[in-house]
Amino acid sequence: MTKFTDALHEIIDTDLYPIHNLNSQLRQELIRSVHSELAKTGCARISNFIRGQVVQEMAREASELHNLAFWPTEDQNPYASPPEPSFPVDHPRNHFTLRTNGFIGADLLNQDSHLTRMYELDVLTHFVWDALQTEKPLYRYADPIARNPYSVMEPGQTFPWHFDGNEFSISILVQKAEKGGIFQYVPNIRSPGEENYDRVKAVLEGDTSHLFSLDLEPGDLQIFKGRYSMHRVTKVEGSNNRYIGIPSYTHDPYRMNRPHHSLTYYGRSTRLHEERELIQVDGLTD
Image 1: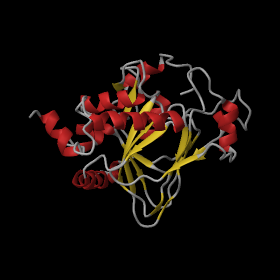
Image 2: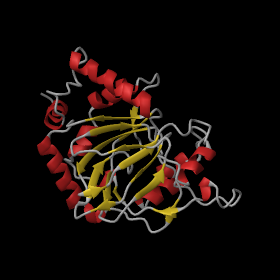
Image 3: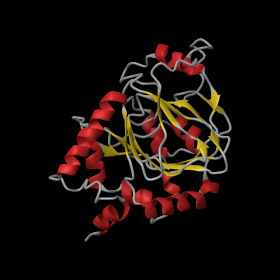
Image 4: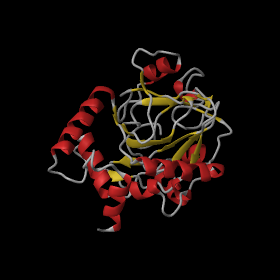
């Protein structure tokens, strides 16, 4: 066995989910199920995808790195972009809310991090691509900070409405809040070149007519189209911190967050982020 095969079977429950076996009937059924859910709501959950012992070790890693998380100090809009004076004060671009959760950047994870080892598996990337059933190839995120971070939420903290900087993410909850910390989303609000600000504004003003909620359990894998679907996490309550790993994917192998987005979420950016700022990717604000 190679180290990659070792990681596959060590981390993922390949007995339940043989994602490496392209001829497996179980894999084919799983692909159909996930694709159906994505088509309906833009989100899909695979329960107990990560082995229980590994989930515990990932939670321990996140807890040990907790003090390295970047905590925001300023309000942000759903696009993690600066204020826009040319728009009305009640425009979504100027709707700012304090985000209180933190992020542990991917570049801060341990060398033997299960989250990173799993993310580097080509087999997993291929499986996510099959599940999404997109014509374009799928790549791991080039952003060295945002490619596979941990999101950290302490009791009392929230993660307000926002869009992701990349097209697709998978999430692995590794420690659940005692209460709250529910993932909520409104699917397919925008598309490349079309921000659909009216719908964004309606959600920000409390419209829940198209709202979905997902109460993840530790070890669950969530596949989500986060660039086009607005989403949030409700207030964490009780005594537990909430930790969730967020490996990300994109159609552009060179894509990265814009510098302001990186500074807003992670407190830092790199020269590569500055270079990416010069490239207009899909006509969207962020």
